[in-house]
Structures are given as structure tokens and as C-alpha cells.
Length: 395
Image (cartoon, rainbow, N blue to C red; front, side, top):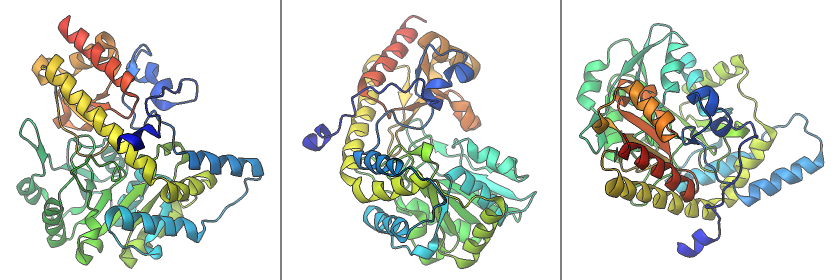
């Protein structure tokens, strides 16, 4: 792997300021200052693969950007990727393109539930889940994950208690953002059994499913059995894997023809079936030529994760980190500092000058926590950790 990692320069610092970059150019609006290191928005500070840059340049040189249909090669690249990555055999008809995973989740809520219905989320969890449910007039039912101080697990007993005759949907985050769990097949099987027994549809956000640390394996919940596939809408994208979020291209996989028809007609009604001309090219090219780059990326991210764990253990024992199994996000526990959430935000943003994501945004269970994006050159990661170390020592 060392040789492969040397083929790609993940340590190179790329100036993103002044590019309308949410992560770097919106700090003043979000944190009240731009004098900090931003490690909040979930995109990486790395270039995408050379093949994507080249194919987009070639398309730009053509100079005509008219209406574009999606070719069979787009769907075939997804089919091949899911088989090689996840040993999951899917069919072209199951795939529907989308502008993003969050829009897909909102489409699902409108397609499969009614105002006043209950939708379950497993907190702490990616915060757009809450707004997607609430803005559509549905009720958020929280099924908090169990935390033993080092590790998170699903609370199946609590889920059984929370499900009622009003419960229509569970939104699964797999791998889980922000706690970094890669759910084991047995965990997903038990979750699926509960949903099957209670006629609850599963919407599975698997956008981070390619970012898996070594020794762990991602299992699409819909791949486990035909029965689970028939109640699951799987939301996927190249945006996290190959750092392409700005191209607004993703897709859903739905084997159940009735659910697929409902999704399609809802998306059609909302005008959410169009796809970016460059996104089509980028997805297909990434899936065709990106495996070697991804392998090197995962090694670099694993080293970043281990660097954070070692740094905190040796130099900032007041801060604990959950050992991320998947995603390029780390969930940091600051509870030993004894600060309220507002005090913690003030301390991290203004004193340490590090732009972490406020843990409270992920639900009540996020109090005392912050999320750190480690998808950056290690020199930036080290600088951020050193700022935390200095601020905590000088409290």
C-alpha cells in the first residue's frame, strides 16, 4: 500500500478560499469568525481523480451543453460498482438518478408517508434527517443509539417500544454519520426484522458506504435478503467517495416495483429527475477508473484517524474520540471539560480557533460532542489538533 499511496498526493494543500466553497468561504457566517481551521462540512480537501478532471475538460472543450439523456453506460457503471464493492447484484430498472441524497430522502417521505405519520431516526444522526421529516409535516421519533463511553450500538428494545401504528418509515444512516459505525450484518438483520414485522419502510442513506476503514465491511441492508430489499430504498452517491458533491449527482436503488413507481412519480411531480451533464460523466468515470485512487485514499484516511487517536491519547486526554469504522468524520467527546454546549462552542471556535461541527445539531445526544472532518492533508489536521491542545492547556 505504501507504493500506491505515493502515487497520489493527498498531502498537497489546495487553496479553496475564494471558490464559493461552503467549508472555507462560509466560516464567518457560521462561526462568527473566519479566523479558524474549518473541519465541519463533509467534503474533502483533496482533488478528485485525474480521469474525472480529464473527461470534464474534454466535454467543456466541446462547448455545447444542451439537454442530455442518461446513457446505459451510466447505469452499467453503477451495477458493476455495487457488485465489485458490495457483492450486490442489482438491475438497471432498480436505479433512479437524483440530484442528491437529501432530496431523495425528502422524496421518499412524500411518496411513502402522510402528514402526521411517524418517522424514526437513530440519534445522534445527520441533522438534515430532522428537517426533512419536520418540513414535510411528519413527526420525528428518536431511537437513540446506546453509548458505553467508547462504542455505539443500536437500541432494539427502545425501537420496539417507539414503533406504533403511526410509524411508516425508518431512516437508516449506514455507515452512521456522525458516530462512524459500520453496521454489522447481524445488526442490520435484526433492525430489518423489526421493520418487516411492523410494516415500516427503510430509507437507507449509504452515501458514505465506500469510505470504510480496514477490517470493517459495509453491507447494504437491501442486499441481505429479498424480503428486506422489498421494503428498502437505498440512497447512494459518488459525492463523498470521489469528492464530487458540487456536481449534484446521486441515485436510489429500489427493487420493489410499487415503491419504485411511487418514488418516480413523486420525483417527477417535484421536477427532481434531472441530472447534471458533468455529473453523469463524473459518476461513470469515477466508478470505471477510481478503484486504485480510492484504495490509496482509504489508507490515508485510516492514517489520519489513527493520528487523531494517538494525538488525543498522548497530548489531550481530556478529549475522547470514537474510533471511526467508516466515513471520514470523527466524533469527539469533550464532556470531561465540564462545559455547557454554548461554552464548548465558544471555546472551540473562538479560543482554539478550530471549526468543528456542533454536536448538538445531531440531536440531544450530541451535547458535549463535536464532529471533526479528517478528510484533509495531515499537516492541517495536526495544526488543528495542536490548537486544541494549546487552548485546553491554557484554560
